[in-house]
Amino acid sequence: MDLTIVIPSRNEIFLTKTIEDILANSEANTEVIAILDGEWPEMNLIRDKRVHYIIHNESVGQRIATNQAVKLSKAKYIMKVDAHCAFDKGFDRKMIEAFKEVGDDVTMIPVMRNLHAFDWVCKNGHRRYQGPSGPCKECGEPTEMDILWIAKSNPQSTAYRFDKTMHFQYWNDWGKEQEGDITETMSIQGSCFMLTRDKYWELDICSESFNSWGQQGVEVACKTWLSGGRVLVNRRTWYAHMFRTQGGDFSFPYENPESKVQENRELSKKLFRDNQWKGAKRPFSWLLDKFNPPDWDIKKPTVGILYYSDNQLNMKLARKVRKQIEKSGLPITSVTLKPTNFGKNICLPLKPSKLTMHKQILAGLKSMTEDVVYFCEHDVIYHPSHFKFIPKNKDIYYYNKNLWRVRSDDGFAVKYDHKSLSQMCAFRETLIKEYEERVRKIEADGWDKNGYEPGTRSIRRGGFSDSKSDYFESDEPNIDIRHGRNLSASKWKPEEFRSLRSCRNWQESSIDKLWVKDIWKNVL
Image (tube, rainbow, N blue to C red; front, side, top):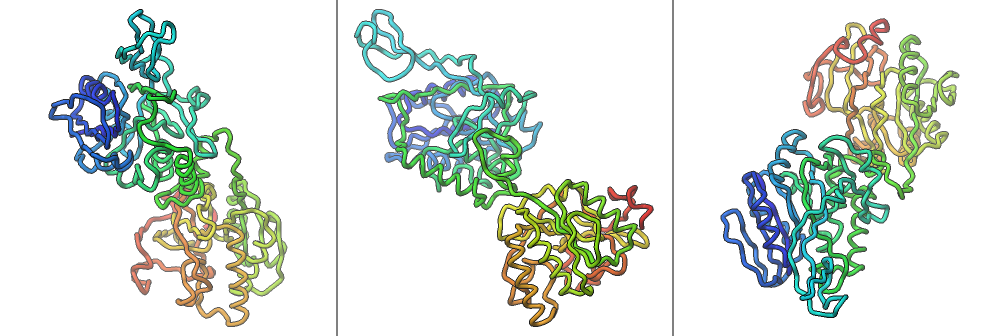
């Protein structure tokens, strides 16, 4: 099958009608797996090779039921829908065609219409719009359900978000800004969404850590966006969803006490807002920056640059490096051994040494006020994209691995996975604790090959702490100029390393193939 449509249901009187609508409007190789979860009305089970049922005598809950159905699927795509929906002609084909355009790293929804499923009608012809059962409000006569199944043309919803309590919201203002047939939305409503089966399991898209009902749309949207994907609306097709918010006998089939709803929202806050979901490749602040939703008042971390130099570099190169750093637009604190007109300068008149470098860094950190600090060295050419990354975790040191080392005399360049101090970014408070301990230990015990890069060597291996580190990668590479007087040794062949594990993903190039070729041809 191309697509498996999964329908979790509990006492859903329109399940059969929904399945009939899917079969009538399907134009792809599509199957339906419906779950009768512990309670169901009198209904005729549809006998069709494209339709399968899972039947539970006792309810297991919406999320467990949904996952059970997906486990039975062998289709490339999964679509989860509610048991009271109508569909556009060829909706499944149109969705699959859109995936072929945008790729599989997305979650996609159709336009959402409202479904006018039925009216209550008495023998005198009085009609009452779908809602709880009961006698006619005009004449008091008994009423019967008249099935209409009309997909209303207005409204047609395409834009959604959630507020700072993680509560679903429509977002008409964003809808006015959407362009094109396939467009982005911050969140979804949850009654219909589609993604690949592989991505469904990779992201644990219907986690059973949540209570049975609630936060489905928030979970799907956050996991898709924060994992590096996109949430898209396909405006070439639609589905119509019946809303039942009036209570009485026409309410939600699963129990959803406010306490359980609130528990789900608190879990969403913990996982997504507080950056504790392990599958995230983007911080939650990235999502807020992208959409700028109203009602959010989360303070963004401030970012600054710490530049340190021994003032022994060729001034022609040093000026070029500083000019490039200034393109970041970030506040700069420089700590040098001679007075230097660059940012807010701190001069420490000391002799160059490993201890001096650590004292420079610590003095700069304590002078700065920004939350996040980028380390910048005097012989590295930084691309502006390097400074766009914001750390997710306050206790981790992050290193940009998109770095070429260029030999100054002939422009030969090499690139390999390595964590270099000149590429580090971390929270200032964490850095201050690290460098206070480094200075203390070096003063007491000497250098003793402890390693320059925080988070790459534990105390057991001769490091200063047991802190952790991770990689990030900028859009364009930074360029480390190797001029013969660098603090660390230069290696130009894999054989020069004691272990090949230290030069994974080895690449070779030249400066005339890198983005700096025109800027730096008169410097090297």
